[in-house]
Length: 299
Image 1 (cartoon, rainbow, N blue to C red):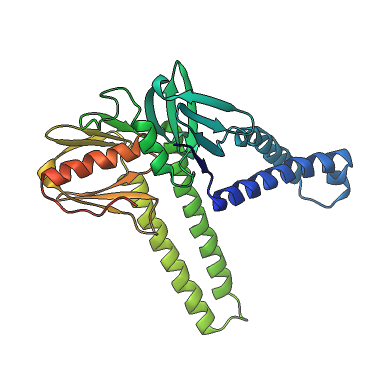
Image 2: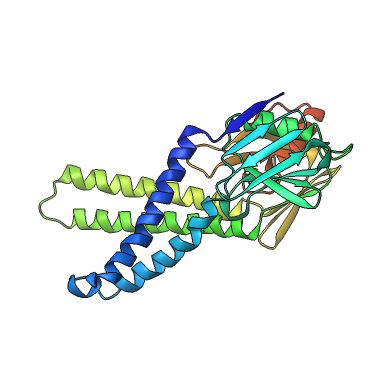
C-alpha cells in the first residue's frame, strides 16, 4: 500500500515564483535602504513608505510557505506529511476526523488525530485518492455524509471574495480611464476608439455579472435539512424545498470557481471556499438523485 502523493508541477512552479517575488521585495527594499537609494533616486514621496509596507507584508507571508505540505507518503500503518518546516506521522487508527478548510484562500484537508492535526493541500496530484484512503480509516459514523448540517464560509475567505470584487471593479475603472484617454486623443482613429469602447463595455458587463454572483448570490452559510436547504446572504435567510432545486452545474470561466445551484426561484453560487465544500456537493447530489434530477459530476 506504499504510495507517494506530491504537489502538481504547475503548483510547484507557481509557489516558487511567489516565493521568489516576495524574497525580491524584501531583499530589494533592504538593499535600497542600506545604500540610501531612496534618497538618491528621483522617486515619489510615497515610494519608500509603500516599499516598506510591501516588505512587511512579504516578510510576514514568506514563513507560511514553509508549512505547505509538499509530499504525503502513505504506508501500511499510516501516512507522513512533508513540509519544509514541519513533518508529521499519522497512524491510521489514531485518525479522528477529516475536514476541508478554506481559511485565507488556502484550501487544505485537515486531519485530526490524537489531539493534533496534520494538513495537506488540494494541490496534491490525485488528491482524491488520498482523501478516499484517509476517509476509509475514519471511525465508524465519521465518514458518512451528513445531510443535516451547516456549511459555513470562513470570515477570511469572505474577505478575499469581496476583495476580488473590489479588484475587478478597480480594473474596470482603470480600463475606462484608458478608453477615455484613447477616445480623446487626436492621434487615434475611429476604429481604434470603437474597439476600445466596446472592450470597456464588455469588461464592465463581466465585472458586473461577477459582482452580482459574488456579492448577492453567494451564501456565507448553507444549512441542509431533510425537507430542503436554508441559505444566508448577508442578513437575508431563505429556505428552499428539495423539489424546488433543479440542477447543480460547474460555474463558467467568467465567474468565481464553484458550482451554480439552479432552483425554481433563484440561482446560487456555492463558492469552493465553503468549509467541507466537497461534502456539501456530495450531499446535494445525493438529494438530487433521490428526487430524480440529473446533474453533471463535480469537476
